[in-house]
Image (tube, rainbow, N blue to C red; front, side):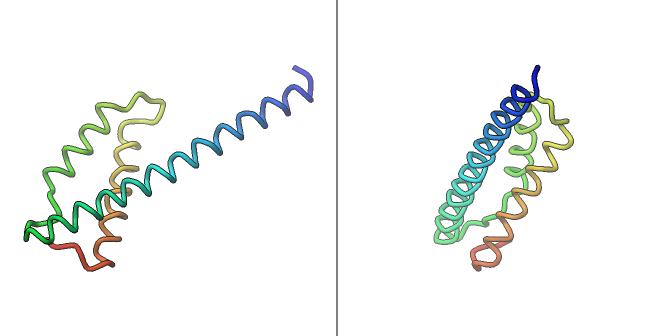
Length: 98
């Protein structure tokens, strides 16, 4: 592969990474919005917003559906962080009840 071909391939792959990053941002924002809607509905109904069984179910499914190459333990950690940060958002908004 020539230097020009290498540079072109590197640029192409970087653009693909940038696109995936954008998709992740959009998906995380959509997930947070859905969780906010769910929290609002639960709060209005007087139902506890945090459900540890549901969270464990989500984390189990994440590991089961992980195609790799990210290790299962790492994927679980990533999703634990996502769940915790979205919960932090709910706490800041005053919608979180244990």
